[in-house]
Length: 162
Image (cartoon, rainbow, N blue to C red; front, side, top):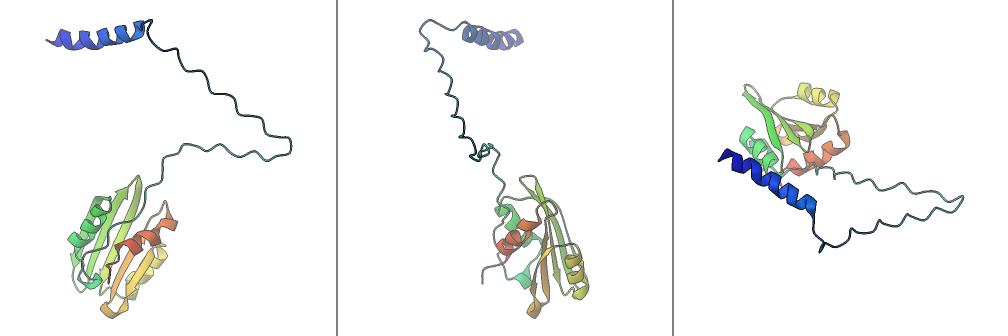
């Protein structure tokens, strides 16, 4: 039985290599691009690079002051993010720290309810994009070390629709 599995792929490869007389001739090579006129600036060739991932998520499903770890993770997953680690602690304040990855980019999302100025300064020091709900004493911060310009977009996409 095992011998049949090995013989069939080899047989197909051998048949494909033989070809037939009925096959169409190979396509002709594409013509060379015309040379640029002297003095004209040459345009760089468009590289076929993969598109960068869209670094957004789905809005959190509850008001910001009611968020828990499950709400935050669900919004990220619905936006195509994979959750790496996620912790939540509850004491005088409620804190969530979630590491999520999408398209090779890792974001750290921090949520603090009743955290105060200390946590705001920490987010600022880390260079995170920050949303503050002063009325409910809530901070939501997003840090993407490899793509700081994308932080604000991810933060904005997480904010619940009012």
